Image (cartoon, rainbow, N blue to C red; front, side, top):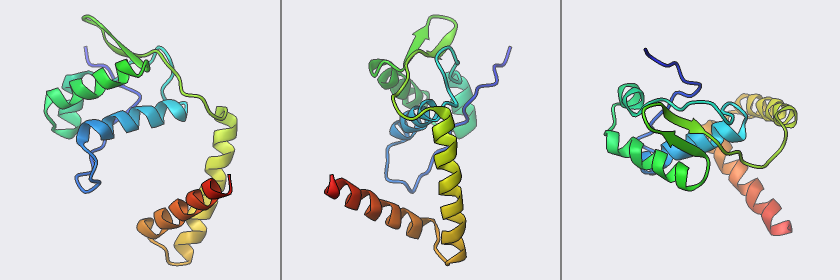
Length: 133
């Protein structure tokens, strides 16, 4: 019986990040945003391989690293399940922040910025705030 997971992986060959790291980051982000919660099942290795056409060992490595981080746990014959959470704002607060960010993205696009330009501005803003302490 096929299991429809709450997450669909994407691989960006141009990101410069190893594929296993991209998978880890996507799971962490889904947990952070509340899309994945403790008890949710990750796609099977076979499902991920079918989704993004990568080597099964890459998926195993990502899942193993997530398990070491205490975020997921493999259950023999059942799959891999989310068991941990990441701190941060509540889902309601995240929704409000996301809406504000969506408004900013629309404004940035209207001003003629592409994704790369938006990322540059975000990185500069993050750096400035970090410097200010």
